[in-house]
Length: 180
Image (cartoon, helix red, strand yellow):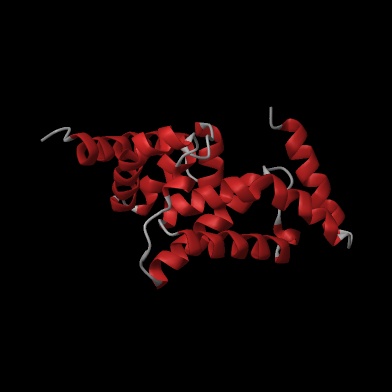
């Protein structure tokens, strides 16, 4: 499924390294939406998420020579984004609640019915430790496989599964009162 995109990504990076900087544009187009959504979930603030996503692309472009085409480009740039989100979390606290329009897609009636649930889920996500929030966001919002998550995070797949299990338990306790 990812083979064609991975080949396209590696070719775009190679063209950039050869001086054809416009080859970076398809990479931005392919990944900006998913990285932005991940950043929103990680930071809980739209403006901070925009800043983190933009900074991640700038850093990726500046360090393309460090990218190893043996690995997925998304995993590499995701790691850059995750580090940038952690840096922003250390530097400042979220000040604006996540816009429900960004949290889920659907018609206006669906938005109205699910608005409160989205707010509760976002609040519960923001209460999780960053390591747990990260695996939930990657699995359920970026829709990565366990293997892709392990590669992106640089941890064993068993650790991914363990963190995801713990995160789900903590979310269940916060949202549904499990274990009380």
